[in-house]
Amino acid sequence: MTNRRSFIRQTATLLGSLALHQTAQAAFLPALPKPAMPHIDPVSEADFWRQIRMAYACSPSIINLNNGGVSPSPRATMDALDYYNRLCNEAPSFYMLRVLDQDREPLRYNLAQLAGADPDEIALNRNATEALNTVIFGLNLKAGDEVVLCKYDYPNMIHAWRQREKRDGIRLVWVDLDLPSTDRATIVNAYLSKCTDKTRVVHLTHIINWCGQILPVRAIADAAHARGIEVLVDGAHSFALLDFKIPDLGADYFGTSLHKWLCAPFGNGMLWIKKEKIANVWALLSSDTPDGDNIRKFEHLGTRNFPVEMATGYSLDLHNLIGAARKQKRLHFLKNYWMEQVKDLPGIRFFTPLEYEWGCAIGTFGFDGMSSAKISQALFDRWKIHTTNITWEKIDGARVTPNVYTTPEELDKLVVAIKTLASER
Image (cartoon, rainbow, N blue to C red; front, top):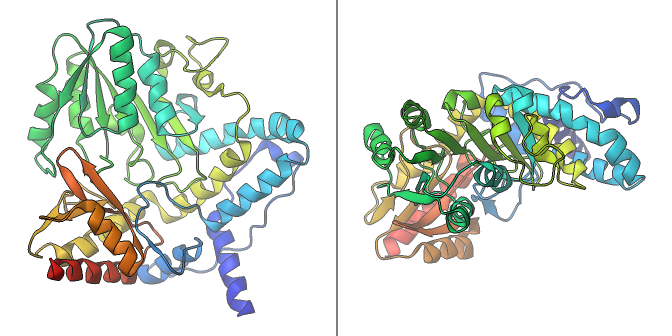
């Protein structure tokens, strides 16, 4: 038992502690332990993913299939978070303001590497809501300007745009999608048909949180730019899930949460703005140069959670160890693994496409005549499977979201549960 615990502890540390950090703290602080990486047979995917599971503190009694809301951090990240918290509390103003405040730059650089962006286009904040609200409230829009958005966008973004509508007199134009969809032309035309010569911004949700539908962002962005319209992308569910670089989307602005698919500590986000657009966006919070061209004007939060930021690097290391392409392929496999086994059940309905291009990780299903709340409650009460119920626009279903630590055996239990509910209807 002692040897087993030691192996798990070492593996967790190794998977989350690759040498990607060159930070200002090196002159002051001892480095966290970084033992040699154990051998992983690249031919055996099962062995690889079992070791990835060891990097997480998975519950032995609950199957967590609601990673779409917020994902757990790896063990190494949690250890780092505890380390930095304790360190900061030894001398807060010294370690936070004189040491760790400088370490945001290496983190910015490493995140920019993953994003395929210039570090001077990356701002670190607390979540996708803050990142996107920065743009929504910072753009120079006037009464009569139109913004095209979708009824399936995230509520916090909808509320922000409605506040600008109420305060500034802009006009919101709504797209109503019929989901799920794999028809690129239909989706693109749904947005373009709403654009007029008064349209200034198109707001796009890269992966719709309610059901996991992936939108063809690049196609819509290119068409919008051809009309002189700017594009804001909500990437809360796509960053560190899909294998892409932010500039590949063709957008002008992009916001995401790092505590979702990057598995960073809770309360972590990132804003990307194309460099030449930075000066056109006013800072959301106080700044001495609110209309300047330095991306750091969006980071004036006052006292911030430095330990959360510093520990993020360890989650980033684990993501890079897995690899973006391998991660997307695995999570698409897990989604389809359970969906393929229940798709022919009588009365079942999917709100998520099975195709690789149109859906990944997130899968939402429902039964005719059975509410999503009842489905989710039954899954937890009877099988201790944690999902979330979705009731939004035309969607009424249970959302199932595995992560990299989820095993096919856990999804086998989900399949049994869904088949049992179908037989009892």
